[in-house]
Image 1 (cartoon, rainbow, N blue to C red):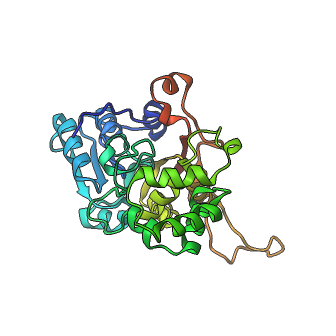
Image 2 (cartoon, rainbow, N blue to C red; image 1 turned 180 degrees about the vertical axis):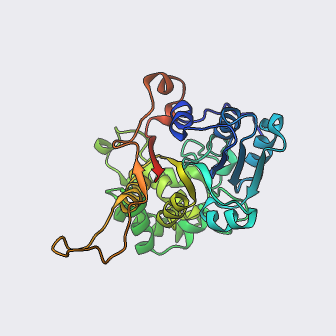
Image 3 (cartoon, rainbow, N blue to C red; image 1 turned 60 degrees about the horizontal axis):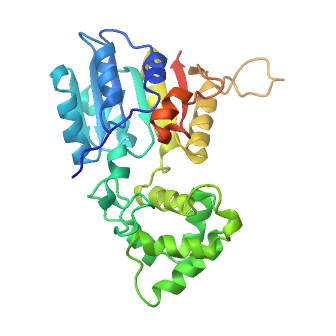
Length: 312
């Protein structure tokens, strides 16, 4: 496997936003290359602790090596961050001082052409699994989903205006032979999207995003997980979440709004009977975005948005 250059998105903003202090206990739900985890451990030295999760064996191996100077202060769990509550309970953690989620696909997964995440790797097989243990691949989605199912995920997860046309053509093409490679899917998409609509980036971008989200169940349970993580913080602890597309960002924004909302009783009532209490203070009224300096060295941070909340 090739060596990759890894950039941790909005690293400075995340570390500052988490308000890290020595002796705290922190959670990085998306370990990836270990860049964020490394800086959390460094900022919380000499006694801070970290729990991190990832599903990718290669990422876990690389990150373990990167973090070795902090041996004894971190625990890596091979699991989905959406199992946060169970992980927290199993480790006996009362509460975290800071939690970070970087919801983007890791650089190694994007750059490893054999993983089939990139629409630029025409010769590669359609895969897109973040965990090799996942039985659902992009190839299965493209070749086994019905036309209506394909149209739905292309529209809902990719916000692609030509979803119906692309889904129909996929079903027609696979009658002759299975669609197995990135290049075959690219060819179908290009033929379905008029040239005048292909000026805004690669024509396959939205479809590949949609299929990746479906394969990895990226949006399933995200809202509930954000709620659980906020409630898993100690008072004054902070939750920082980086999103990369509008679907994720809307879910995080909605969860933050729910957590920030106080009494929802009819205002005509003399006392509160709903029992709902405000649980967080939103630190970022408008999401933070990458600086021009960061964009110059890491173009993948272009669509990143960082939202931060504090437990009250």
